[in-house]
Image (cartoon, rainbow, N blue to C red; front, side, top):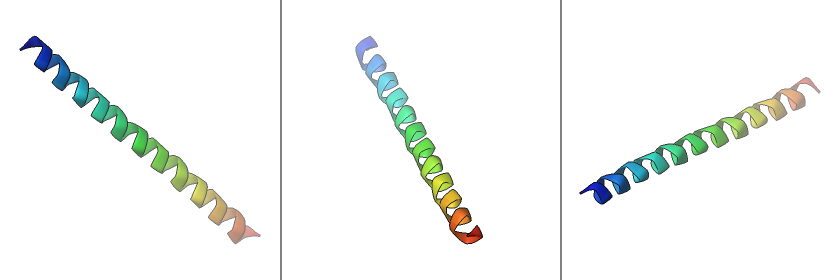
Length: 43
């Protein structure tokens, strides 16, 4: 039981980390796209 519980906690933590990394990467790429759009728009 303890092993199964640890595995479920570990999988949930990795899922949270994966979602956080995906969100941060998406935010970084989105900000980069916005910055490029602003630069091209101003010039």
